[in-house]
Length: 126
Image (tube, rainbow, N blue to C red; front, top):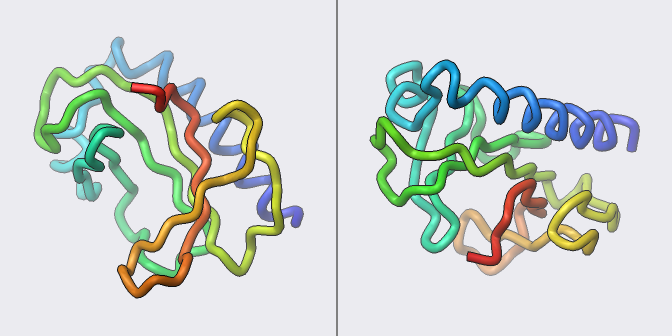
């Protein structure tokens, strides 16, 4: 539980830090891709970028999210962060955003089983 709360705190702080520096330093999906990050479009939610080394079964993943559908955009506005917690570590914690509700179930492998739970730290209302 302590690890999960720590991950939530880190994601919240990272969101604030990155939001403040994104415009000043030109943070964008293209630069992250060149630095080895994995960036991909999530239909209707924008481009999500994960640090190198994150893969299925990682305890938690923090994505930087951009308001674009182009994973190689050089001028996409930073939207916020998304925190994923592996399903076996999620125990009903509330999401600090998304209206204060619960995390959303994700089946990343397409096998019909929830792999992760997601909390969005940006406006997903479209």
